[in-house]
Length: 339
Length: 266
Image 1 (tube, rainbow over the protein chains, first blue to last red):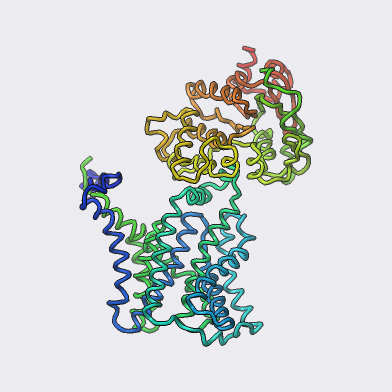
Image 2 (spheres, rainbow over the protein chains, first blue to last red):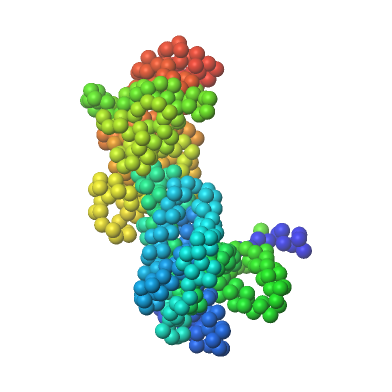
């Protein structure tokens, strides 16, 4: 078998329709238009239909949680793949955003629909300021500091017994109704997916990618890399804080567990499974991982074991990520060719 | 060349010292660069040539001493501020953005505040603009515009183009000075032959150049003055001929075939 394989190599060719739709010709044929639009439409329509097809409150809630994690994964993928900052700060962003929204709601009596964007913006500013000291540095420092802050803040709240201490902040308003909650988080995910995909292809996005590629050359190009890193961290942490704010309004409670490391780790796993650098991939990863984790609840203690095995299987068999694999299959023909 | 030079120096290096631990990389080095000239810096390996570039452009801070650009102290400034004043550099080990197409490399310097201020291009924010200006600059620096070369992914380009890309990044900033760290090294004879007129044209455009080189013969073609470094100290400074006939230079370069060859021809 091996001798036969050695005589051949796998050849990948772009499909004709892919080559044609690269140009303006796509506008001239419905078939080519459909080739471009249908995957995107499938994603948007699929997400919008999800709340309708989900049986019961429990699974509807799972969809909201999927979206929360998807926002975090999107922020992670943006920072890691397009700016070169590996962030373990999911928990940090969720905690800051969550507590801020809880305070805005309980202390100032604002509606959740005002609290959430407010907490996202304020949280973005706070997180960026707190991460500022490690932005001029290269290497693992950013990862370490983003991992440290949620642990630090959780212990501060516990030790000083502020912000409700270990009991957390209770009596937070939920979204006006469950449908609004569902469609709010889903549309937020779709909007940020769209915005980030556009952003990374603008000239500003190119500068961010250049910071990842080669920060010395960006310095030599008369640009302050700390400034651009801060801008990217603000975008990512705002998205993370928005996710956290939504979460506390869904649970109607903000506590120390919003700083749980799940919020840092699961988005990374979802990004790896979905395909890093695609921005859609992390969303798909979350759509798989979060429901799987819920389904595995039946196994009790063994849940984590099965969960790890599934993760491992993905990493071994599809290490490139589902989205990258899918894109390749969609755009290219593969065949074995004799050499 | 005399016509380009004015009496006042554009860059003054004053008693610059840099130590790495116990090693003295630069020892109280002082020199001037005059507007419009090409200053060549040569020296054996480890004599501190690249450290000079790093100290001037802010990539490392001198332990002592000062660097003045047009009379202003730039010693404590970070690299991007110094580049913003128009003092740009190339890297000896090329630092392009390998994952981008060649012309996209120039979108980044063209996005900088300095390029927005000084750019002759229609400064608007439209996306297409920086791409076309980038391709213009690449053409100026020797990329064939109508070929596929400017559009190729940078990681697939040969060294000659990468060296040009380094210069192009400087040009995108409309620089006053370019510090070239070995732009000839690693190039074939024919590539160097096409690079020399390019350097001469930069000078005619009024850009002051400091060139660090190992390729002495080509350097002497373009340089107005040459400075020789040895163990972080200035050995000799003067015209190419003066430098090459100096016995101390012969001693420092002892054993180097190229120097022997150049000197016997001088």
